[in-house]
Length: 197
Image (cartoon, rainbow, N blue to C red; front, side):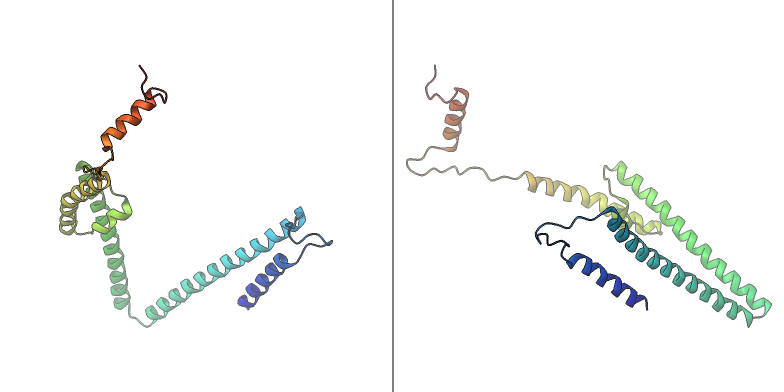
């Protein structure tokens, strides 16, 4: 049903765009809309977006309710001891997840500090590739970055600055690069006069 609504709304929009202006105006001139027409178009689009958001919220609420029902059903058949064990296991998993997140945050801070001391600045997105919750792995990655980053940066700078010198050999009857440059410079400085004194 929702797909039919979206399909109908899209067809209406296409018809609005395809219909030529009334009054026998040129097809070349763009249609001008009145404030009421613009408001109607905007309202239609807002209604569509509201419907999408409401649908997503309903689906999420249903999903949450279903998971709560499933958990309640699971707990219903358990004894008090099993319930307590289940809750303890669930709390331990949450605790482990929080500790892992906290360790990762600490490692990110340490990595950011060490790299900035080495003169290397990486964004969080790039830094997160190298950082892990385990300190040993993070330290190995940081040492590799500290070693490889300056080398790669230097190579990239050298490649960017590299230029090919003008050819040293000149063809017969051709002036050298330096002579041509000096002549052009001299003419430019003398206001275009060749032999100004």
